[in-house]
Image (cartoon, rainbow, N blue to C red; front, side, top):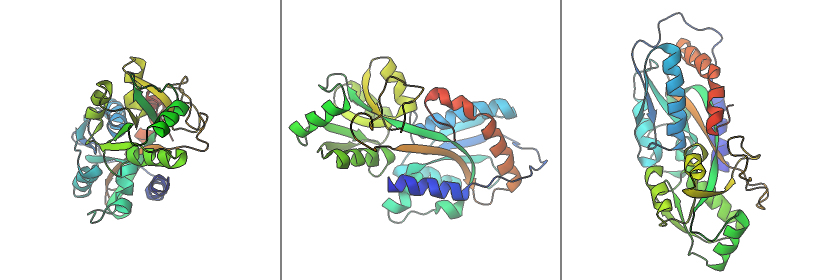
Length: 286
């Protein structure tokens, strides 16, 4: 996807790893980790995994503060205006990084207004359906959608977000027509899917795997290039017949642009030490 590729390019260009770490005491107080989407989203899951680990590493609380709205722009604007001292961090992800390509009048510039502290990981999406839908595989879903154009209902967590764009890519590559119902976050999409009000959706693999394992919803495919170690029984969408299909969201900690390089270095080193922790949640550390 062009927006995802651009977002990862921007992130790579912004990531600065200082060669020296300052001796100043950091953190001096609890650190706010601002997640741009509701609890259960991939950004929230990544933020909480690392917040727990960094709390243990530093002996200071790293507290996740969910600030959803405006496709992540509310959270991004809050962090862009924060004091650049490393005590207010943003869980920067694909959607927030790509907003300027999809929206007018975005008040922040990702490259100008943020400093990336470290890459958290890359999370694929799961393609899931409710248990009553007569589709047990990707091929069956495509056949069902083609047999009833515009009748199968799919959800996203907002127009222009990673889940919406991933489904649009899937529709383009398969030639199917489905009805889009945008939600404000994953906290309502999953209950509505279990209740049969939604037929299908792409969602964050780390947040959906719990529901899949419990049998509340059914996974048809995963958007990574290879099967995930966290869900080895779920085939990739590529191997299910949609050749070359791949999509994912990245997560990174970012702070205001003028954050001192010494603090960036301290956080970058700490994040690097904890990357293996995230793999059990279905997130690939990079």
